[in-house]
Length: 319
Image (spheres, rainbow, N blue to C red):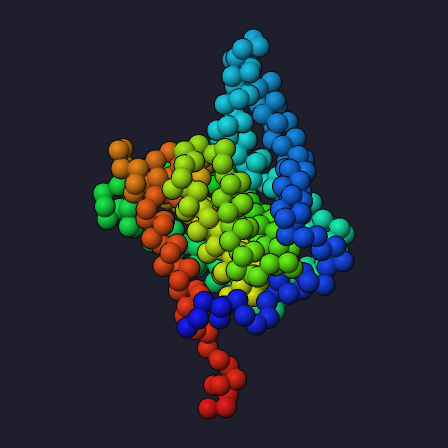
């Protein structure tokens, strides 16, 4: 089967070709950086406000030096209430991106992948796919002795529930930004496969400041972005990759207890630990997303999505 098969035919991205504002692809990249920066501003305000409140309420933090140290630590390594605020407040940049697409580019929600037909089933498919993919990544590293099971670590049901909601929102926000907006807008002036590659690279670069980011992480997150993109294209829906992305992060951090893109997600249903001096299979500080295990899983999944043919309903009916 030819590579172009999955990219040929009609897709939700075709709706972006009806946009009233269609800048060139290179200007679209500049605009994406600007929109991304603006969209993050209200979220940053919320996060900083939560950090300031925590510092004020913590009587053990005194003096300018201690306050500065605490502020920097909570900003770079958010945990507890700060992490929950960070995840929940991704509603704000998601809303700004949608507003930009609707009122600046003036295109429909359908063109962003919010296709109503079969959305519930596709969201469920995404949940199953995301869970299966990360579990496969974990099992490969486990087979090489890079991961070990150490027990459970869930002692706060309310925090766990908030983390679940937070990851559902955060995963959807990144998909709205990178696939619903950026990939679709780029496809106006570029072939869809090129829009997938460029948007996936920028998806990876969005994590540049996360702890443990390196060349392998850059490659893996680009592959992960490609996987989410072709998943959306294959099912003609943003809902499927929103679900897969959200459950991927949730399972990684609060089901298996592993770092999520270099962050500690807190309590988890199970707790696994990464072995030392096995960064190739653990991803080091960044976590399994920076491991060879993820590289293997992503390459296999991308190939399967692209090359496994769809069932031809018309052919089945005529047969």
